[in-house]
Image: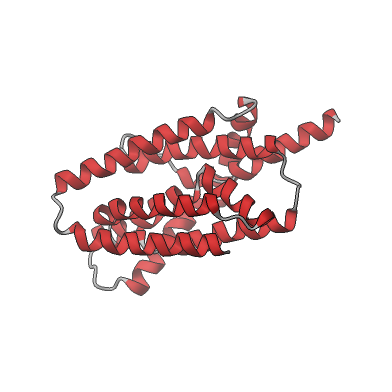
Length: 236
């Protein structure tokens, strides 16, 4: 869990710096910084998707994951979590605009920090061998991203540290328990679906081109490697 704790700390530090510096940065500069982060996120997503060994696994995982996500209404659940945190810890903000901004910051940062190749590979590596090198690199990147996001989206970004603690810490624990059950092909398809989700996040929240219910696509991260496992079982 050392890598996850480090990641949480860098996000909190970066978020606080973003809040402090935010008032000193012009709206134009903040917008450009977030758009730059969006373009980088989209490019990173493309690179992740290209790691797939068979695009049909990613497609199947994404479609089935979307069905499950819409059924479970994951996006609505994330919004309720963000709204609940806003009501409990951010009483100084009044009006619907402040609440919506808190939720957007929480959701955008949570998805950005938890959907990526370093989250998956770093958590697996830390769980299996105790090596936190990848998570340390991710922590530095997330800290700088938190500065940019918090300066624009506000205090909700800081609460994404809770999501990192639960999700990334959970992955590390599961990886340690699962041992060698995840094959290279399964990790590759998880990474490919994660790349698609990053592209959706960039288009929807960071570049603001088209609203995408990215949260409802999250089950694809689990469905895709399960498809790899099922096909290998049938073929074997």
